[in-house]
Length: 279
Image: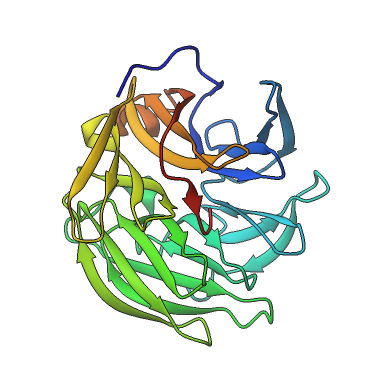
């Protein structure tokens, strides 16, 4: 595919892009802010946070929920002031990262299984925590190698998770109570990060180690590849027809991130198959 033109937005380390209510939303992890980018390119800070955000989701009732990595909590930022939505510290074993909200208002949150500030231990595994509307938080999946980007199918029956340290994607069945059953692992992707789904079942996922955003079929085939101007961080399908693929990249490394050094941008390219599900 062709190279990008001017970026849609810039930041320090943008994460968790979501298309909602005619605008692009994302968090800037290093700046600790929640951002909204309008269709005409205006970028505004919706909420400033005291913790580091890495994930973002929208409840069916309109609340905006973001993750707080170090407090291991979810915060409601709907009115511009963060308020506690769910405290996961009693059920997770490590730093929390990305998240997604399904159509029933259930928050699925990645638990890395270790303290990210100390680095990634060899062979470390984490899981997925669930924060449902009834407040009964619990762990619903284990054994994932750095669970990162997440997406849910339109019928709320399937969750796809990027395993960044496993270089693959995982597909789970979502049962009626929100529990997860692993169906399979698929794809071979260099450190997959943020992802989204399209209407044909494909997964658009950013590949950190490949400086690209790729489209992966459920049988593991890579059908499209878009080079990005930096490390691949995340992607989402949005716009009026959900055929605008917003790609986040960052000029950084893992060592730079630990030092707070990063320059991030959002670019957009038109694709043929529209988005589906959440995000």
